[in-house]
Amino acid sequence: MRHRVGHRKLQKTTSHRLAMLDNMVTSLLEHEAIQTTLPRAKEARRLAERIITLGKRGGLSNVRLAERQIRSRPILQKVFGELKDRYADRPGGYTRIIRLGFRSGDAAQMALLELVDRPAAAAEPKAEQKVEAKPKGKAKVKPEAPKAEAPAEAKPAKRKAKAKSEK
Image 1 (spheres, rainbow, N blue to C red):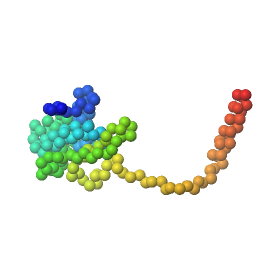
Image 2: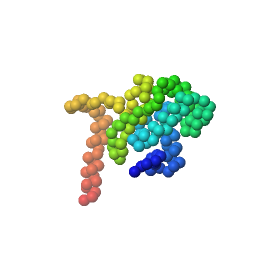
Image 3: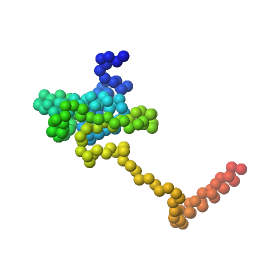
Image 4: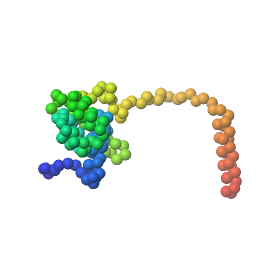
């Protein structure tokens, strides 16, 4: 059983894990949505919620506590300004995890970690943008210029020369 186990190790050394999570939280607060693996998203969510709570409380000591993880001055100003106002009436639950399926390379479960109540213009993540489909059926092929045909004719001649030299 996992009683009183504090966090996931994520198969990283302590220093690597802490630096990675700090960077993920900073990116989340900057872009308001990040795509990562599910266990990483769950760990980053814990830290992000604490940072936003510090921002809501305000005060110099809370700024210094948040500055331990977020070392970017503009992001800190966003936390203690814009995000403080946005989540003033919300008692918690500032983030949302949306499962995106499995990554094709290693079948890791992917997730979208985003801030709730973010502006509608930024609500559509990059992973879900649709690409225009190519039309089905045979496409009309334009005849190629004579310059393109000249190298194509030269290739069979070289092959014949190689075949004769090999015999």
